[in-house]
Length: 141
Image (cartoon, rainbow, N blue to C red; front, top):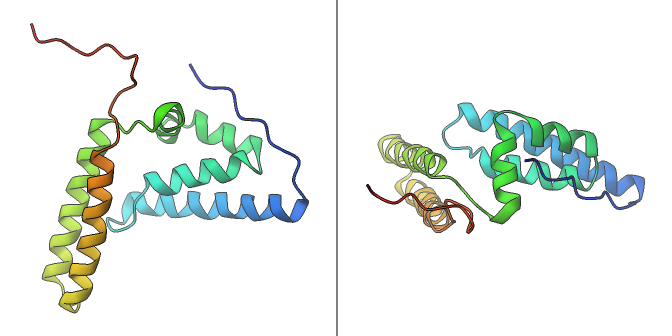
């Protein structure tokens, strides 16, 4: 059941254009992040939805009804939920990216700084709830 879109407050045109530009840039970065392991997808899509809610009801509706982006936006909006599968996918990509950085010719301090940032993101991500509070918990048979 999709949530109704939040009302778009009246904003000056310049501010609305700023939010729309931010939404489109975030969406572009999120789509690029699907293919580049070091660029996260979910935070950019959530940022795009946040900015679209302040600038373009049409773009927000498109994002919320998108087959790939819609569920993550709705889950986040309903309670900051990140499902287990995306958590594992992010952890695998973070781990692979960290190994690549250590293997590549980057200076070691750059690799370790990036690994520290990615690790903090992974810790934060795993602390997010995986289901809604009112979802029934599966009991073992």
